[in-house]
Image (cartoon, rainbow, N blue to C red):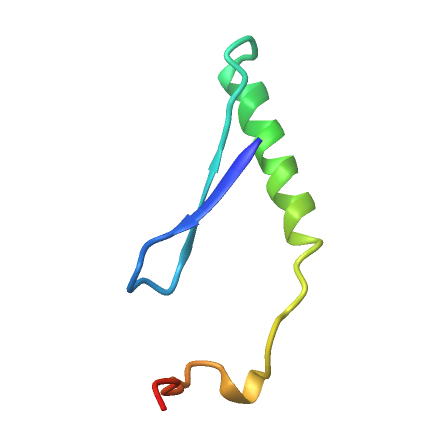
Length: 60
């Protein structure tokens, strides 16, 4: 139903939601909004907030 993707070097993710060609634009928009709200309610933060935005060199 949806694809989440990002680009190398960017700090944001993109969401693309498949629309049903048999539904009206308004119905698709309502379905998409409902899907986004449901997925957002399931988000679980990951990692230490203290390290947010820090870069760590893992080359050594």
